[in-house]
Structure formats: structure tokens, C-alpha cells
Amino acid sequence: MSRRPFVAGNWKMHKTSSEAGPFVRDLAGRVPGHVDAAVCVPFTDLAAAVEAAAGSALKVYAQNMHQAEQGAFTGEVSAAMLLDLGVDGVLIGHSERRQYFAETDEALQAKLAAAHAAGLDVILAVGETEAERESGQTEAVLRRQVETAFAGLAEDAAAATTVAYEPVWAIGTGKTATPEMAQAAHAFIRGLFPAGVGDRVRIQYGGSMKPDNAAQLLAQPDIDGGLIGGASLEVEPFLAILAAAP
Ligand code: PEP
Image 1 (cartoon, rainbow, N blue to C red):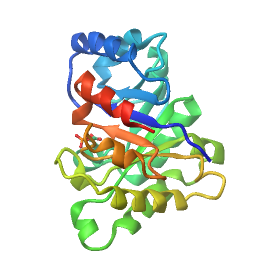
Image 2: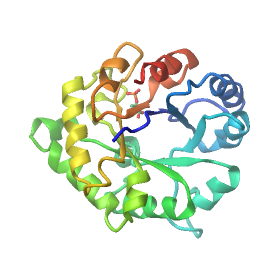
Image 3: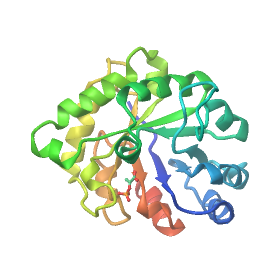
Image 4: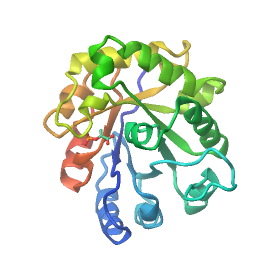
């Protein structure tokens, strides 16, 4: 089955709202037609990014959301709040949120279900640490992260979810998984889904993807796109990665 490439930028905690508007306006006007593209921006940039991307193919995602509809969760943001701003989707489970904000697989299961119930698109990030890879636990970790997050989710919602495979040791370090290593992990993740879901689910690679290594990674049969941190903070390298998608 052919899956349309999907490349998303993750700005992390970069760019103010006044910087986001002009950046997104420039990018949105130049997204190539053969690829789906999104930017995952800080909460404070969402309104400006949505306005700047209006009428273009560029999607705007948040970088987190709370699973509850509303309530006493100081500092949190719900799916309904994102939708009301015109946001298209949400990135959940980034390793920085797992590592620094104690995000658990169980919370991600609830977030994934809540985002789909609300009608948001979702990128769920998974990936092993360096210690887990070195001790031979990569597949067990990926299995636990994927199976827990997707438990109980309807097949169509599961198939519509994007998974980002991001080996933690490759994020922001300049160390990229080799195309063969990444392909093996992507094929493993795809195989965790039932037939009929696995061939539809898009799996992005994330971890120091740059204009000079993107084409080789994106050419792998189970790599359907990228989740890009550092190289998404400037328009030209991000566009070069979009252009590298097959
Ligand atoms: C990320 O933040 O998801 C990421 C992959 O970062 P980088 O591209 O900078 O490694």
C-alpha cells in the first residue's frame, strides 16, 4: 500500500508568537505538493501559526495536550481548547515529555483516545534510550510503548495515527540511526499492528534528520516521513527535507 509522505517540524521551546507568524507564512506558501507537512509549535504560537497557515496545505500541531475534557489541571490544555483555535493535530509522547515531565505509556493511551475522540490528528512518538538499545531491549521497549498507547483504540483511529520512531540517543545529538537500523525498527513497529492497520499507519523517523541524510532515510520502504527538530527551525533546511521525500 502506498502511504503519502508526512514530514513534521517540532519546534520544541523555540520561537515567540511574533516570530511564528512570518515564519509559518513563508513556509506555508512553499510546501511541495507531494508531501503532507506540519509544524508542532509551542502553545503560545498556535494562534499566530494557525492564522499564518490558513488556506495552505501546512498543518499546525500542538506539542502536548491533557487527556481530560476539562478540570483542575493547572497549566494544562485540552483537546477542545486546541480545536477551538483551529489547530489540526497534536504531537504526544515526545521523549522529552517522557523524560522531563514523567509522561507515562498509560497517560499516552488516554491522550491518544481523547485526541481522536475530539477529532485531532495525532503523532505519537516512541523510541528507546541508548542504554536500552545497548542492553538489547529496543524491541521490548517499542512493543510496550506502542501496545500500551494503542490498547482499546478502534482500528480506523489507529490507522489514522502517525507514529514517530525517535531513538532517544539520536535526538538533538547529531547521531543519526543508519537507514538500515531505522528501517528495521520501523518494520518492527509496523508489525505490531494488526493486518489492515499496519500497512496504513504512517511511521516517521526522528533523530537528527537533516537535508544531507534525509533522502537516504526517506527512501526506506517503512519510513514514511520525518519528525524534525533542529532542522525545522529555519525555513530552507526544512523545505530541503520536504523536497527529499520520495
Ligand atoms: C525531535 O525533537 O523530535 C527531533 C528529532 O530533534 P532533532 O531533529 O533535533 O534530533
